[in-house]
Image 1 (spheres, rainbow, N blue to C red):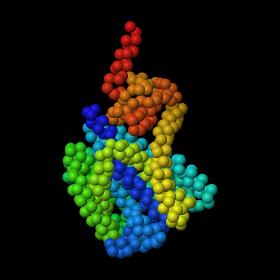
Image 2: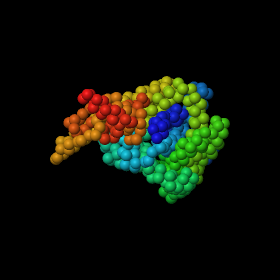
Image 3: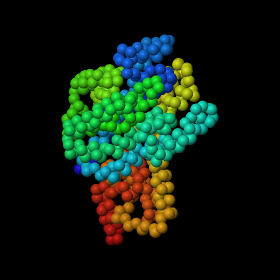
Length: 475
């Protein structure tokens, strides 16, 4: 059992490579979209018409050369990685559950904290800065309600993400992220009860049926299709529209844990299959009928192609270490990227094409730096908020609670955190009273976090060995 838990804590280099590549692609997509004033978005007018539409914004910079024209085309389709992240989320969820029983309450608590604390760190630090920049430069900034909505999310919850999207384009997907976290225990239960084939068939039926309904009955369009006079894209943010993609990620991970499935395909087979599926999905996105299945096909094709590329890169141990290090910050990168792009293009680049090309690498690297800083600050934010809540509870509590501990965590102890081994206590702090509440800083060699002592249990015989040493001191 311990071996399985250690396996779960390890990150896959190729998977982290897809994550970081995906968030960079989204940054480039948003940057190009904003700089050109939304010069091109896919329309349901057919493949040929869209290719002609695509040439126009590229030719707007005739002095940039052929290479610039060629490199300008892929960012227009960077939005496709949103669906890839949904697939990866299903894949990662199943990997995290291998070898242990799913305790729904513990899972949801831990998952919500992993989603919300990085978001709160970014929101609480960036919203005051955005407001100050707007006042200093006299530029348009999100209103007070939108900023408050971002700071208070999810206490103030808008499933469409409209208020969050007004602050940052990527924040609009936070309700969708939370939705998949909430339904994943149910899907895990159904996976065990129904099997992979039945689960995938049911989820695909629900997704296709739902997408057909919202397209032809609700007159909705995908979030990346900005049609004149229409903003009816909210139905596509409901988890039903991507349920089959998440379930497919779960199925692939389930097969992977058994040593089977597309993860073990030969590179040539996986790449050819990925290219074929992607091309079909690519054509479908330019037709109204194709919207029903386009977002189901595109992430599969992209995932298979990226799997081949980043699995090859990860064969080098040094590059695998780099991919894992970068992928660790991909979530914060996703949250910050739109903020950086908006500020740089609106305040610095404006309509200057040479400056835009020059600052693209700066935006990519700068966002990574901010993401690392945000991840560094997140444990402190978690610690501060937990301390404030416990302090308030202690002050308002009518009858003090005297705690009797069977085990007291100490620096250097190896502990189990929510069933996962490999954690070591780095620091222990007493809040209010030594008999009331202990806050422990943990580390596993890749990241550190502050947690409540109640979430820990001693690993192995550490506790018993310490008690034996105490007893021997009396002799």
